[in-house]
Length: 397
Ligand code: SF4
Image (cartoon, rainbow, N blue to C red):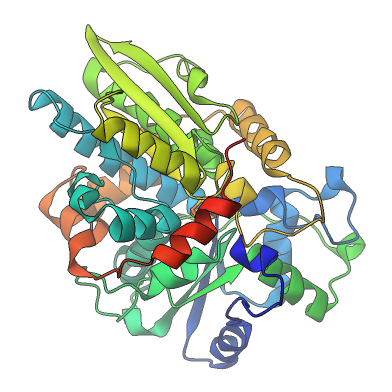
């Protein structure tokens, strides 16, 4: 977001597109790309494609045309994140009264914020890695085994609505993947647009294509990760199932949706009251945390996204002067969810298979080793000046 507001153009996004092309030119390298939920809502906004034709499958076809060997869906690893994070939450929730809520950890902008501004609260972050990082780990472990190749030969690219994801991919990981990084290169939605333009792709000649298998299956719950409140809603759908053994109505938790910067809900899950809150924009995050510290509010589970409206309004998305498009893009994600037969992360057949064949159960020893992280192992210096900038830009709305 700061990049889009920088008055002198001094802040620029790191351009990693050349690295992708170099990997594609190396015949010994397998290029694997994942596409985040919010990207599919915005990738064609500034391309000359009718909005109704700009489908997810047309985007997949464009990525194959660009030259990626395998095109996968971050919705798959969003489902994996839900399996791990909902299990982690229930373990904490059922262990007794929670001193402080568990915070989601999938937004690197938020993780950087809490580390620099409220270091004493870092221990309340979920240890689950973000969907981007979980995807990279699975690509270089489970999928490398399926392909029977050395993980070092997999070049993992992410298309993200986010500039902070570039930093996240560089954070040291505690996983035991044989390759040094989970994700090698992060390209923003604007970067994807640039690649499509430079390839001069003729969309009227392009046939839609589906994501590759098995890491190309995602549920509706994974899709709504791209909207503020989506992680919470997806986690509650599966937490309900883990507690009761039954699926809730898919829209049972829809009261967490919306664009208001800080909202709260209470749900009953088999006689247990679960108090949740959702905030987007760092100004709202600060207000929420200060209220928690003053004991004016009390929650069990809190989702925070740094960008107002969540990833659909992320800093790597196309910019249209004077227009805030997060809400319109979020609606597209809820439409995708509504139309899907698969609306629960725990029913995703690829997720079931990865646990059956490789990870065991959510929060297993191997799942912890590969899919969780230690937020305290990397330093984040306090930065008062940055805080002022963030507070100015991330206004409540
Ligand atoms: Fe990135 Fe913004 Fe999404 Fe956070 S909310 S993951 S900073 S796009």
